[in-house]
Amino acid sequence: MFLTEENVSLIEKIVSSLGIESSTAVVIISIAVILFFGFLMTRVTKRLKLPNVTAYIIVGVLLVPIWKLIPAGISGIIPARVVNGMDFISDIALAFIAFSAGEYFKIGELKKSGRRVLIITLFEAFAAFILVFIVCFFLLGIDISFSLVLAALSSATAPASTIMTIKQTKAKGEYVNTLLEVVAVDDVISLVLYSVAIALCLALANGGSGISFESIGLPILKNLLTIVIGFGFGFLLKLLLPKTRTKDNRLIIAIALLFTFCGICALLEQSPLLGCMVMSMVYINISGDEKLFKQLNYFSPPIMLLFFVMSGMKFNLLAFTNMTTIGYVPLFVAALVYFFVRIVGKYGGAYLGCATAKTDKKVRNYLGLGLIPQAGVAIGLSYMGARIFTAQGQPELGDSLQTIILASSVLYELVGPGLSKLGLYLSGSYKKEDETPLLSTNDVVISETSNIDNLDPKIDVTPEDAYNEAAEQYYEENDIRHNKRE
Picture 1 (cartoon, rainbow, N blue to C red):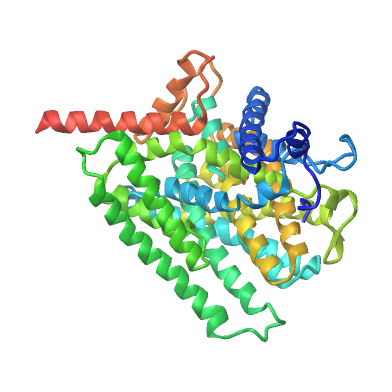
Picture 2 (cartoon, rainbow, N blue to C red; picture 1 turned 120 degrees about the horizontal axis):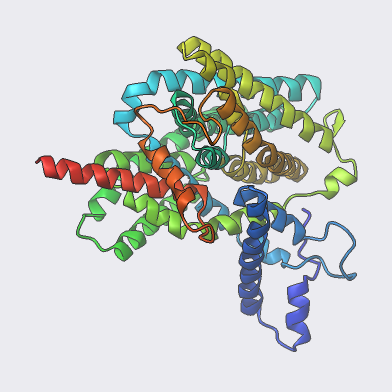
């Protein structure tokens, strides 16, 4: 690993120079430094109109010694044992990510456009998966297990950049509605592909000799078990959160259940992603409670910051400079190939999916441009994939997987907003400021989100906050109107 326990960090050196030997102080100060520097970097990326995820990854990279700019004998600012001892943060962060994604799977809405959206999503996700696997395995000569996992990760899309671009341009119309629906379903397909890829990876661990029920059937059964448990937890969450419960207690109970579910998944050695998504999907459909998701969104930013910064710390930039090879090519070449091939797969798959679903021509031609960004789920899954490769005695593959995903995620977050905006413009979803944007009947939430632009510019509002605020306002207004009619 890039971070080693033997080296001394800057924080440890400062604390010990004061004549104090306190592990507790080192851990607390380290967390404070991560949070503080993460916040400071978002001040920079905000001016560049980049998502916070990019800032967090950059901070993680900068907190480790990449260039020889620090005194000899110091491994970095944050102690390696602190980073290695906070692995549990990744499971918790993934649980929050998955739980928030399940909010958008309302049965009523899925019935209206579910078939069309599912067709498009299957095409764009599988096209990226198949194309990345073919190029990595057959052309670059990369290990089949690594190629399968990397291909599965290529199907994931990050919605934050897309939502931010929609808000900034005040875009509306069929293209926008289709894009948001596809992005919501996309991560579910990615999680399924990842689960299958990991099962095959374990089966092929010893040159294929490990293919058995224990290597293939058991992981699948464990994933099904986590889905069933998540289904039950959704009902339990509804039971424990009556309307009379206070906000504080609602938050405590929800987090307690999420943590419990993460613990169960850890015991089963499974990712909490699918189960947490099912849990939130069940809860939103039987309760209609949007407020809980907003509460969790207010609680989760520090956890997400810690997770992405620590992911950045594990980003091995030296692997690029040292010309580390994977398959037939250097690692940086593999990362660049992955970056471009995934874009081709996403765009081509979205085009074919839209053609099959018979969508409008403008949606068909430009939907793929809004599916380029990649961050949260892909980074989290790469982290878990790296742990599996390390457990198999192939830590170098785990490092390479994280390095490729983190490097490409930064690039995607740099070019993604621009491509999304181009797709919105070419599809006619927004016009110049002196023209009236296109409207559709399903644009209430997006319209309300756009009103955030009228607030004081000094107020720090993220795209996710704006979207959740608008969604809550929409549902509250509809509840009021419904009560008046009764």
